Image 1 (tube, one colour):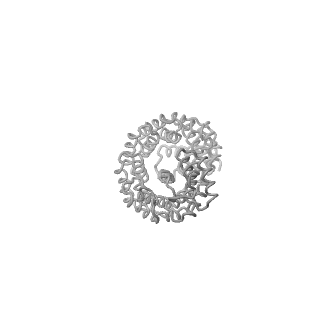
Image 2 (image 1 turned 60 degrees about the vertical axis):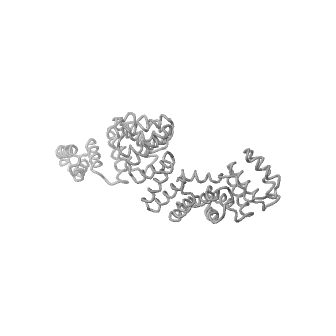
Image 3 (image 1 turned 90 degrees about the vertical axis):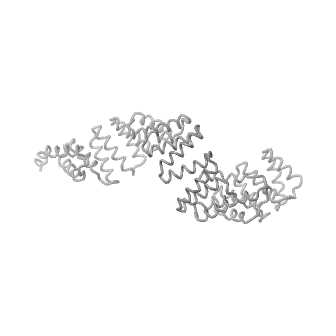
Length: 426
C-alpha cells in the first residue's frame, strides 16, 4: 500500500497543465511559468501571489501557485491555492484532481469529494484518457481502506481507460484481496507481472501477496527473481531471508541476511532477523553479538533484551542473563514469558528465592505449565523447603503426561528422597 500510494501521489506533478486556457495575468503568467520551468520557485511564487491578489478568479494563476507550493513542500499553502483554483474554475478536471490529491496527501476526509468529481470531468491535456485513468486510480486509492468494494470499481474504471498500466493492476489486486477475493487478487498481480516481467514493482507486489497468503515456496521463487534483477537492493535479500527463515532453512536465511547487511550495514531489520536465525540454529555466541549491536541503537527495546538474555542463558552465562531479563521486564512488565526466562537464569545462578518470585509473577500472567512446576519444585528443594517442593513435584507429574521423561524420573526420585523430611516435619 505504501509503495502504491507513493506512486499515485506523484501524479500531483503529472504535468504542468494550466487550469484554463487563458489568464488575466497576461505576460506575468508567462513569466511565472517560465520561472517554474527553471525551478525558480521563489520568483514564480512572488509573481503568482501578486496575480491572485489582483484577480481572485484567475484559475490558472491559482493552479500554478498550488504547483509551486507543492514543489516547495508547503502542502498547507498548496491546498489553499488549489482551493482557489477550484473556486475560480469549479468544473476544471485538473483543479479538482490536484486539490483532491493534495487533500489525500494530508489525510483530509474530503479528498474523495474532489477526486470523485474529477472522474466526471473532461481533462484538457494531450492524453485525456490517461489523465482520467489517473483520477479513477487516485479515487480508488482513497477508497481502498474505507470501502474495498468501491475501490474495486474505481480501479476497474482506471483499467478500462489504461489496460496496460501495471500499477493499476496492482491496485486492483490489492483491493480485491481486501474485499476477500484472493483468486482475483492473484490474477491481477500476475497480470501486472506479465505486463512488465522485469519490473521490480510488479514482482514485489506478487511476492508480498504470496507472503501474506503464506505460500512460502512461491514467495521464495519470486523473491529470488527479484534479487537477481536487483542484486544490490538489500531489501530483496532481507525479504528472501525472512521467507527462508519462515521455512526454517536457517543456513540459507542467514546467508541472504548477511548479503543485506553487507549492502547496508545499518539495516537493523536484517540484523534483527539474523539474530533470531542465529539463536534458533544454536549459534548463541553470534546471536549474542548481533543482539548487543542492536541494543546500541535500540536501548529500550524489551524484545532485544529478551533475545540477548536467551542467548546468554543458552551459553550458561546465568548472572548476565538474569540482568538482561530484569531490564526486559522493567521495559515490558506484562510479558509473562520473560518472568519464566528470568526464573531460569536466577535458578542457574543459584538465586532460588529470586527464581521463585519470578515464577510467581509469571503465574499472575500465564497459566502454570509442567516446566514451571518443575522449576519451582527444584528451587524449593534447594532451599530445603521440602513440603512446597513435594507439592510442586506432584503438580509437575500430574501435568507432564510423559512429555519430560528425564525430569519425571528426577521428580519421582526426589519425592522418595524428601519424603522422610516432609513426614518428619509433619
